[in-house]
Image (cartoon, rainbow, N blue to C red; front, side, top):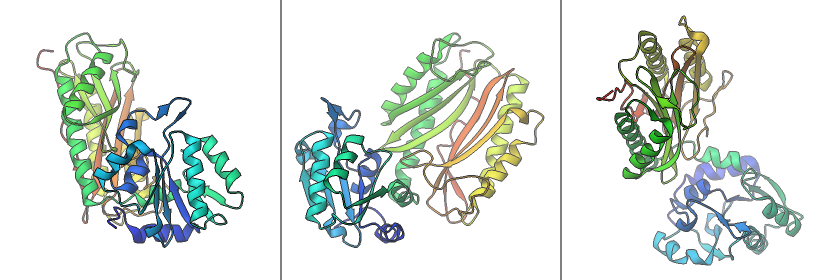
Length: 377
């Protein structure tokens, strides 16, 4: 079996939680545990008829050779092409209840009907969960979401390569979108253009927060980007479900002195934090570095600093707060955000991502951190 994740780490996490079986059903974890597979027909929508598409991946503690995948029969061709590593494949007609019934039968067949089993409680449909509880009354169901989150925390070289590509493509797409700006263009039009730029680079569009100063509305709308006004695009895209999320700044004409100061402060805070990032540093210390750096300006009352882990899920481990004693490790990927939300200028923000290396960190998608000014502004 060519298992695509760290099996030693998985078994240690299972032992720590006292689980006999861990079951995943979220799109990101199905893709992660399978090594990249997800049924293409439902990549953009799971709804179907009166229910929805509901796959399950089951991983047996100390017996990964007994792992299984519950799937729609229609998936067979794509599964054959993907050469899935799961030893057992269990078809179920589309729908949450039929999939849950197949899962319950699989659990009984494995002799696990009186054990402790982890489910993704924030993601499993209520009707599936209720059916499992009825069919398996002697099973203790607990939340396996933290286990799967922790399993994904350290990225492999393959994952890092995907994220480098996704972030570089996103930075290019945002820059290209800024360049089409002309006086009076709406933020909704900019969002639509960004969607096209991302698609041309092979990225799936997730969101775009487009804010034309001096206002603070970030939802794409009929708001217009006028001469002398700043604009930020804080956008998310994904490649194979690995998320890229950055924010860059532009101005319709030369930015004013205060806007330049706010932007320079964003970069200064970001760079201060990035210099502090290396293996062995406490997550709490990174939060303190950022908050202290953002608090030393005359306009610091408008500052906001955030740092979080990112991968297939924004805000996945490591988690950051001032009291966190977790240490940074090579292979973690972090998103770092500094905002100055100023009533006279608008929302000035830079968001970067870094991958932690053996000696420090590597920037992902660092292009376009300086001001972009459309040539015909």
